[in-house]
Amino acid sequence: MSANDPVPAPPLAVGTGLPWDVCVDDAVAAIASARARHGDTFAVASGNDNYLFTFSPAGVEAFYRLPEDKASKGVADYLMLRRKLPDEIFDGRRLLPTSLFRRDDVASYLKNLDCALTETVAELGPDGTVDLFGLTRRLGHRMGLASWAGPGSAQGTPFDRLVAAFETLDGSDAFVHPDSMAAVAAGGKQAERAALDEIVAVIETAVHATASDQVDESDLFGRIVRAWSQEPDDVRMRGIALDVALIHIASMSNLMAALGWALVDLLEHPDEQKRVASGDSEFAQRCALESTRLAQRSIMSRAVLAPVDLDTGDVIYRVPAGWTIATLLPLLNTSAAPGLRTWDPDRWQRHRLADTAALPSPMLVTAFGHGKHSCPAQPFSLAAMSVAMTRLLNIYEMTPGWTSYPKPVPAQIGGVARSVDPCPVSYVRR
Image (cartoon, rainbow, N blue to C red; front, side, top):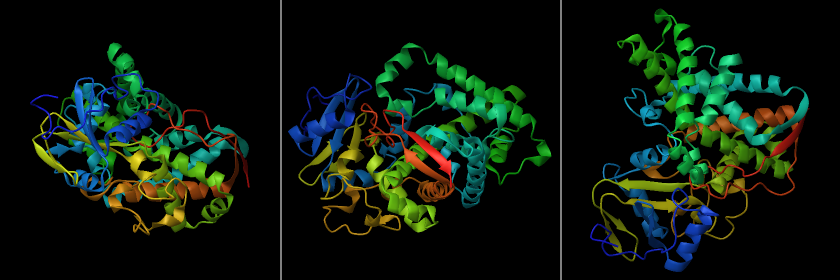
C-alpha cells in the first residue's frame, strides 16, 4: 500500500487478482475466498488497478449512495468495455444508450418484440431442437435491430450479417470472458474493427433506404439519422452506424441472457411454467426478477474520480481518485439471508422483495440495482421477458436436454451469467 491508498489502510487480499489480469478458475469464488479471509471490506491489487470491495450492510448502502460525479458507474463501465471494444466506438457519439427508454420508444420496442417473436416462431417451425441461449440471443438481436438499426436490418441477409458482426463485437466478452482480453489486446482488436466496418456497411444501406422526408424523430433510428444530418456523407454514415452499434451492444446481451435463465427455471418448474404459459403476466414478471437475481454475476463498480468517503459501518475509508469501489452481487444475492439460494418467484411483490425482515439491509439483494443506480431498463426488461416467456411457452412444449442445472462461465465477473455449456431444448408445437 502507498500514499495513494485509502485511509485507513484496508486489509489487502494478497494473491487475489481479477481475471483480466491473472488466471482465475472461478472469479466469484476468488472474491468469496478473500472475503472469508479478510472480512466484509478489503482491497485487491490486480494488474495496474486497485479495488476496494465492500459487503457489509452499511458499506453496500454507502456504495449505492456514492455521487456519480465523484465515483462514477459510467466511467467504470467504460473502462471495462474498452478492454474489448475499439476506442472509436465511444468517440463522438451523439445518441447514447441512456436515451433508449423514453415511453414512446418502449412501446415501439415491445411492438418490435412481437414481430421478432413471430419471425422466431417461423424460423423454429413446428418442432426441433435449439440451444436455449442461442435462441434468446437471436431474438434479442432481431428486436433490437428492428428498433434502432433502420429499415430491413432485422430481416434476411442484412440481419444475418449484423448478427455475425455483433457476435464478434460483443462487448460483454469483457466481463463474460475476461480471461480472453489479453489476446484481444494482443491482436490489436482487428477482428472487432472488421466487425465494426461490416456494421457500418449494413447500416449505410438502411440509411440510403430511408428518404430524408421519411425520417421520424419520434423513432430512435430517425433521431440518430437526424443527429448526423449536417455532416459530410462519409462522416455521417459512420457516425450513424457507430451510434447504432453502441446502443445495440449496451442494451441487448444481458437482457437476453436473463430471459434464457428465466426459461431454464420455468422448464425446471412445470407448475410455474403452466401458469406463465396461460398468460399470468404479473407472475411472469416475478419469475423474471427471481431468475435474474440468481443469475447475477455482476461486479458493481464505481471509478473514483475525486476523493470520497465510504462508511462501512465499522470504518470510514477515505478513498483516493484512481481506485475502484466495488461489490459483487452473486455473493450478496444468495447469502444475505436464509433461503436465498432457492428459486422462489413469490419472494417478489411487484419490483421489490415482499419481505426484507431477515435482511440486515434491503440493499443486499437485488436484480436490477438500487436507487439512482438502478438499471433504467428494468420496466422494459421485465415486460419484454414476460411477453417472450409467455408467447414461447404458450406455443411450444419444451423439454430440456441438460442433465443437471446449467452452470455459469467460471471466469465471468459482470452482467448476467452465461452458461458454460450448450443448453439444448427440444420443442414441439402444442
